[in-house]
Amino acid sequence: MDPSAPRVLVVDDDEAVRTLASWQLESDGFAVDQAGDGEEALTAIDADRPDLVVLDLTMPGVGGLDVLRRVRGATATEALPVIVLSGRSGETDRIVGLDLGADDYLVKPFSPGELAARVRSVLRRTRPVAGTGPAVVCGHLALDAAAREITVAGEPVELTAREFDLLAFLVAHPRQVFSRAQLLAQVWRSEGWQGEATVTEHVHRLRGKLGLDPEARPRIRTVRGVGYQLDP
Image 1 (tube, helix red, strand yellow):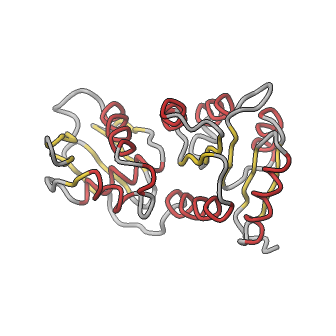
Image 2 (image 1 turned 135 degrees about the vertical axis):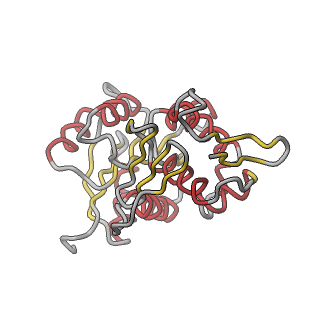
């Protein structure tokens, strides 16, 4: 195995699922570690930080949502990419996972090939992009694409990888109106399977994180019957 290959930690209490996912990811060039429960996953993350975690939600003891909360709540791991892998297909579970900072959500039974594609996609989005260009300033918002950091009125704001990508796209096209379908195509690439409600959820969370003071933040406006625009 190439020592520079991205390392993926697969966390699931079902050995068959771990084996299937690991086989596919290894055949696609990833280095794979496994954990059978949440406690083992947290130990592995602390001891030998992976590049990405594939995380089952329903496990005995420390569950997947608890793992996700701890990962996002710790400074050392808050930016660690996480793909939730779950037998829960309901909208509520998906929203909870996204609200806690999951970068993607895949429902069981899943295609091993699709899982590998999702891993590649998330790693492309979350890995730092080389570059030393100046931050883009939009009103009181400053966005540094190279460092993947933003500040609003001088205060840093923590975003998930997808939230950052969505905001960066809107900042790059101020005042242009985009439909939800267009945002899915441009920001989520070919992942339109998620549905347009995914865009609505991310916009809602972005508004909350950017703050409520209209003088200190750009507005993500809803254009009724069309979609969204960034009003700087």
